Image (cartoon, rainbow, N blue to C red; front, side):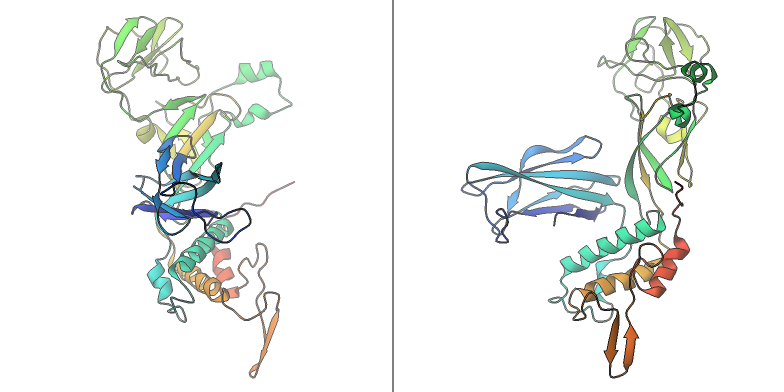
Length: 388
């Protein structure tokens, strides 16, 4: 399967690949005795989950597998598989969406009418059709119905792109933007926030801070910790936050020390102990509408174009029962249609009991083609109309 595979972060994640020669449907082992295949996993944010070159486990001919520990939070991974065929290097990429939960268990789907035949309808088919149905329901309703990972690249000042505003007026009238609109509704947890290439971290640095001068302070590893006040941009090399076993309560700008509110304060003593506020947990607020707000003690969003990166968990905590039942019915239809003898383009069906019109799916007003299912989808739809 080369599509996006969905797994939950509540169980170990099984990954697999089957190698085929070019334009062939016969699985084939790569070179080597025994046959060898390696893989690596990258998070979509660029971090390494599993180092490239990790050996996969050989199963049936052409098949290799790996089992990965689930991440603590939902995530999206890019898996790159590598092998050699006839002395030539080959790679294949698969994609994994790690979510909080599926909307229905496979056992519940199997228990539905006409679904008991595991030969005609194997477990893998049920899982694939469930993924298909969940994606469609999310697309039509405009939101996730379980917890998902999201990554947004945003403008620090949404008005910055205004072509009819002069550069001088922009500078004089600028006040730091403190609210941004995320791409997804129902944000639940802010995982990471990067402003102008500097990550605002919720991780407590280790070691003891050492003030080397009135204008420079680094942690024991020599790493500059950068922050910014409610309007003044602070950059690496000119200003460093005070870091210790717990935090950064002040920072320097142009040789002078400022507190969180931008007021002057005394130079900290060398090796002084301070504490780092839980920036992500308490200083940034998330709203159901999809807004991200910087609190009074948090960094404002610096002006710029695509200079803010937000990683977060979003989605509903639970799916409404009528929507869940509609999903189950649609999955059942998708599975049964895989062995249907009715032609795909048929619009009606004649039997001894009469002629029946077959439902036809349409773009948005009837996305599944099943009236009772589409009615439920429309009830929960939150798509925003667009204007040209």
